[in-house]
Image 1 (tube, rainbow, N blue to C red):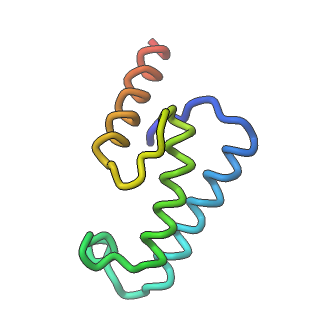
Image 2 (spheres, helix red, strand yellow):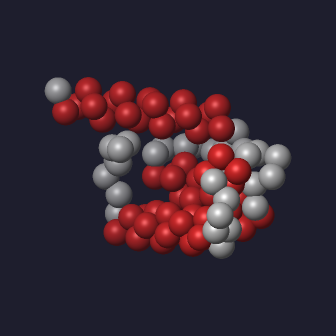
Amino acid sequence: NLPLPALDDDTRAALIEAGKNVLAARANHPGQSLADLYDPDYMPTDLRAAHRELDKIADVAFGADRRLGDDDDARLKILFDSYARMTAERG
């Protein structure tokens, strides 16, 4: 699990709801493996939309200073930097 930064109640609730929406979108496609669902060429539209919404909320929560959209490299850098910072703080 990735450690979470301190979140206000609204952001925490939005992240939880967005995560539930991702799970609901996956459930719309029974019988498909995760590999099939996450194939970038064939990802179902509802799942892609749910992930984009989750990404927008998580980007802000983890400190993005701009809208990242589909810039997964920038998103990963923010997540890994945040992870390194938070685990270093734990000692």
